[in-house]
Every structure is written in C-alpha cells, then in structure tokens.
Amino acid sequence: MYKNLIIRLSLGLTFLLLFNVGFSQKSFTGKVTDSKTGQPVVGSTVTVKGTTVGTQTDNEGNFTIMVPDNKTRVTVSSVGYEPQDVTITGQTNLSVSLKSTLSTLNEVVVTGYSAQRKKDITGSVSVVSAKELIANPGSNVESLLQGKAAGVTVGTSGVPGAGASIRIRGFTTFN
Image 1 (spheres, rainbow, N blue to C red):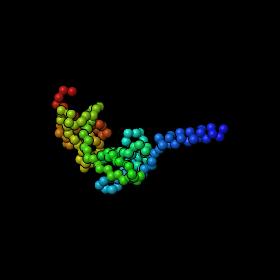
Image 2: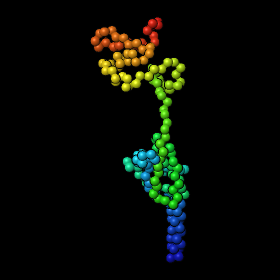
Image 3: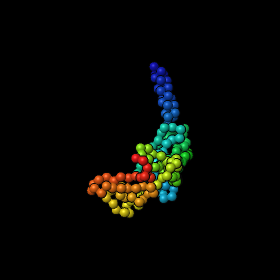
Image 4: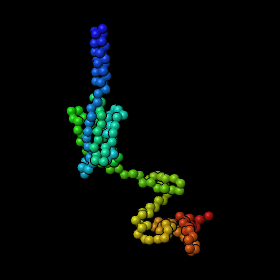
C-alpha cells in the first residue's frame, strides 16, 4: 500500500516538475530612453520576439516583462523611433536606448469632399499658412483669404452679416 502511494507521489512530482520546467519564465526589468536626450520614452512597447507576450513602459520609461526560458530576444519599439532587438541572455536588468527616426509625412491637400497628396494633384495648388492669416486681423475667414492666394477673389455684397462670395479662377467663366 505504501509502495503504491510512494510511486503515485513520485510520478505526480515528476509530472509537476516537467510541467514547471516546460513553462518556466524569468522576469526582466528595464528602462527605455531616447539616445540623444537620455529622456525616458513613455509608452514604448516591449515584446518577446516570436510570441504575443508584451508590455509597455510607464511614465518614467520603466518596464517589467515575463520571458519564457526558451526565448532570448525582445523587441522594443515606439512611434517616432527605430525598433530595436535586444538579446537578454545573462542579464535581468535591461537598458535600451532608442534612436529617433526622421520621417516627413506627405503633405495632404483637402479638395472639396476628399483629400489627396500634393504630389498627386495635376492642377494648381496654393497654400495659405496660419501665420499669414493671423498676421492681419479680420472679422471672418473669407476676408482673411483676400489677396493671399493667386486666382482667389473674395467679394461681399456690402450688407452687414451677409456671407462672402469666393471665386477661384472662375470669375469671368460661365456660371
């Protein structure tokens, strides 16, 4: 009777040990900073490469992540920075310094009910910056546009509170 009990316990402990070894994890902590300023990168993502395990940095750039024993790399990424792969063997405290990426967005022009990239438009495009509009005070947007863009004519009826009529390169055309 005791022999069967001992065998069952030893088999159970062996199974538990094998189960625990197969799914053991290590805890890693670290800090993510900007390579130029040394400031923490808030909200950057730290993921274990090849898995769905991940976390985000806190307000001071710190993070803690549980990594399976069979994994040795984490990927650190954030908007505006180049993603970086870090090998985590032999250390539990990581220090990651991300390099910022300089990328320019395509200028977008709003045309009627749609938006297009400026380079895709074949017609004439004129840009009026907010600085130009603020430089001359006016009572409404229509009056601020007068004389700022070639081919744009702003006319009013002279009645107080009446709207303006804006004509774009079409003052002398039909309708």
